Length: 215
Image (cartoon, rainbow, N blue to C red; front, top):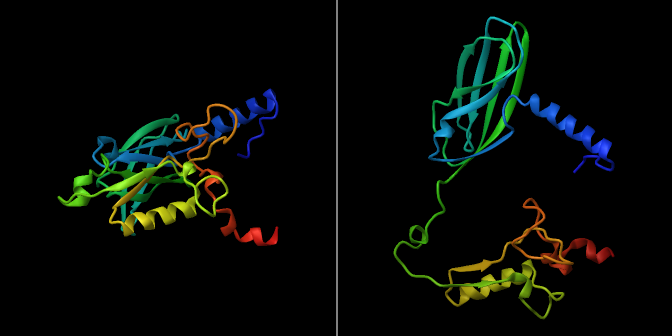
């Protein structure tokens, strides 16, 4: 992850650097908020230690569909502190960019936040089925066997399973979590991933990897 933690001293130094960087985050780089949450109407901003009479701020919102809005205001300077600015609109569901600009006496700071607005709840099946009934299958992908996989089900098997289910009139295929695991030793479980950022390489359809032809 780009952090030198090879010794206790270097790990401590890396932590101090991360804390210093955190103190200079004028706005959280990423924020996930439910659409109906009251906190969606406010923005937490960290003001720098500027001992001036006035700090002017500009708040800009660019929604996922490209709509842009802008608001302005001012507040007193002084020691570094956190303030809460009102967001005059309720952003729709999606991935948006929210930026803050601070300016006073020739000094200027700017930062951008990826604002992710999510539904208040998962979509219920009734909303997708419109009153109709449906069936599907669930499978632990790693237990799927086929004539072509390498001993564990992979994403190509999942594709074929989905096609077969659709041909039989099914509406869905449910699978276990596909996040990265240790894949060996004790406590190996799809419900205990080592990260939620990456997928488990176990599910790669090896013969479909282009580089395999050059191995």
